[in-house]
Length: 303
Image (cartoon, rainbow, N blue to C red):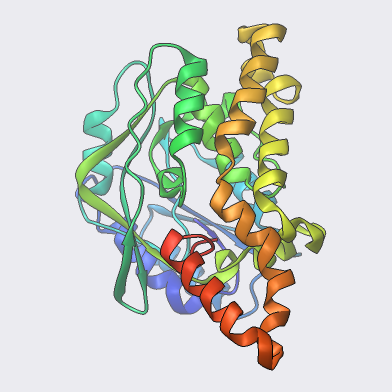
């Protein structure tokens, strides 16, 4: 569990992990230099329950470095991440373990997205069982949207092969694509990870700020993510090396193409320019029409 300045929501997340019906687990919390009482809360939790292990950075390392600290530190045969404002159904870990077998790289329950206790939408169901690694990667990237599957269970041996997580926009897509190259990805029915909308992932601008990346990337985030995938697959990460150079390049190009959501790309490119119409009396009706059309198409609704 990576955390930063979330003492108010951390208790719910931790309680849901410790209340799992599968009890032989360790909960590792990596605190990214919080100053809001997180340290005292985690120290008390570790004193109460020996399954809790608390790590702390004295300086803010950024969220990606905090994730990578956990990837390097986890000791179990299987590993999963849990955000500090999300929570799990009690049978989540047990259900994922029951589905984990040879050739499976990631198992997750379906994500349920909520805001202030109210249901907003269900996450994508991921089921990528192709025998060809390249086909699994393409299928995942053609399907992914909210990417709640990132918070699923994976073998630690597989996780070690795909690390570190890069500090770039879309790094969760890059991370799970690497997992797809290593084995099947499955969603198990009947259990949920509950994801709170908001925080650093509330919009692209917030995400870029936490990564220390230029705000210009918010103008075309789909193209930025596609370029990251191309780089990572075609020549960047060693996990794709068994494909060979020609297949890596072909897969990188295909992955970049299928990852682009053209409606969202058009929304990000056009909206800033057209938003100025709302400030002009003669342009308000045109802006209102544009806003209705984009909402009906579903563009721009999610980060």
